[in-house]
Image (cartoon, rainbow over all chains, first blue to last red; front, side):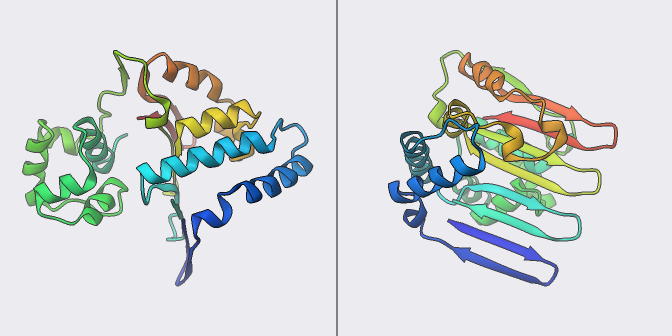
Length: 82
Length: 161
């Protein structure tokens, strides 16, 4: 996964190995955090694992898909690519 | 409003072509096609006629701002794993937001109780019922499902393709 942020003349690009955060361990951490932040969410590790599996499958099919592409009129940019 | 980039992406997908395949036919790079589709760049004027021919349409249609085939009804039940939910926000100030989410992911997110305001704080998106959109898609309707044009000129579209 690539995260590209540009603001004016400054910018940076993060290249993150997807397997680092798309795994059961990371899912368990996210569930714990989400439960404390959004108590109304009926989220559990099993559900999040389903999400992780779906993302992984999607990544295999649509490599380099731009999930988020935000561009402001003054040239700022946020790009998240699978 | 529909840009030339949106039209190219629409017709390419309708033809079942990849960006690489289209690029190869036109003698350009796949990155160039990607830039056209994301409205970062425009195709060279000399490529408009070949583009129209490949897509079995006219250059007038490619350059017009009218939306193409906004909603389609599929004959068979669509495979949710193959579909993408796109949220396109164009503000009057020129800001652009493009979010592409796998439909399957949206469905799971809805099941675990996530709501649109938890994804985005955009006021006009808060009243959109994503569960309703999912049920519409499951019944076989895809395309430009929601289009909201606010009084201050912001334009929001939800497209499933």
